[in-house]
Image (cartoon, rainbow, N blue to C red; front, side, top):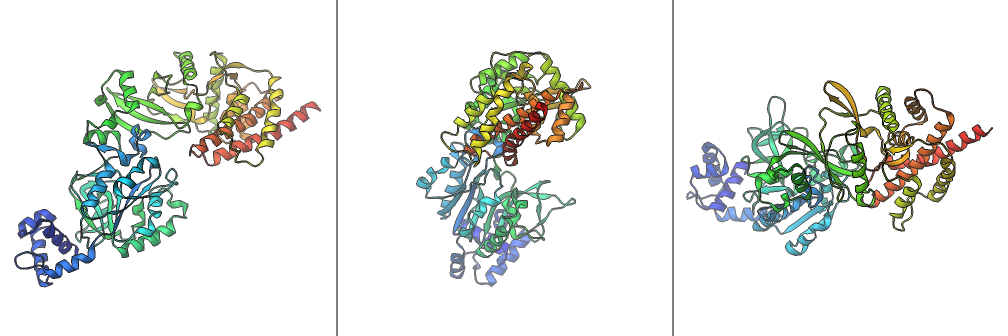
Length: 587
């Protein structure tokens, strides 16, 4: 029995008697295909002349019940900013019903009760589903670093006669069935230039190419036991290979000729993927979840209605915050949302005071609004801007010229940034946990030895950026001229200006020759050796400072990979360099 014959049997089971023309409308097949298929089914003894299922057909259908379903719900849903700060996308509501509950209910309607939900981000919010619907939760703690191939890998023992379903879909009609005769993958009849598959004349999913645009891929699939086991073998080989960290689960379904499953199609709009704030608004403009704190902040700051806020796009997640781009009344803006644990790291009132001091000085980006209570900040978007390339000497020289001009303005605020005080403060946030570094006590003792030395050195005491890293220098085109804007002043305060040089170096993960080159770019007249040694000392101190900061963020589930290791090495290596330099100077 082929795909067309199987689909026709399912439709007849659902609607009872239908003539051939009505069958063609329900199945989406041509009348000629329906006529041939009906004749074949009658020849196989599965369909009567009166278009009714025979007892043999019912016996055969009983062998093809779906066994279970796996719902993939572990990811951040980063494109859902700002909602994803408050709600995982599987729990977004359309007409008062969470997406995942609608999917579970539709599965229950076809007697699929064994349902596994793979969770990760905000996993606790899904726990109620266990009691309410009898689902089983599978936890994927790699959700932050890897894509949903790794979520499906967690469910491999359960695959076979299985629906695979993303959690962020809203299906107008129930697409599941009590009987599934073959493996399939769901696409729509809409063309999608980003799709990797298209439907051929045999209802097969073959690779799309430049000449033939693919069909929009929806992500729902049904896999028979044989297809599931074959795919599981591929997943087991892919998971240990880091090349597959960021791929979708469908990559495991692909073979060279395409997907070895049949195409199942739905009309465009029959299934809506909720990936963005605006998609949610289009589907349910009265959704309570559109009332995000961030959107409310924009409404108040710009004095606009929610409907005027459009074009929302997620920007790269920063080390401290999340940001998104949006358009309002023809202008583009960036909204910054403070990240995990930042209320304990940053004094937002002090940050607001810094921006007040910078106002009108042509130093930073244009601030539209900053809320000193919650840290929400709106800035004008700088078109065609790029960050400094720390490997480009010309970029570095230009940034050091801008940085020195800022320092020589000798701006003042009422608060300081204490390097050694912050080292102790970040350590206190560990709340009694020991450092992950075995020799932390010795390393900290050495860094603290530098405190007396630094207190004795001459300083340029002024407003200092503190986070003057390459990513915070923006090259812009304004009125036909290139300008540099220094952004993100969260940590800024009164301090020795030369701390900013150390911060640039350690974020760029410079080796010593690059450090010296940067110092020379700042001190174009030449840098005295005692100042250079002082900057080395700041590198050691700031390395431990940000290493402690990384340890706290790690406890919140935020990892920084090589960056955190490198900061700790700066603390150790540059302490030794300072000791050698001072010994040489004392000879």
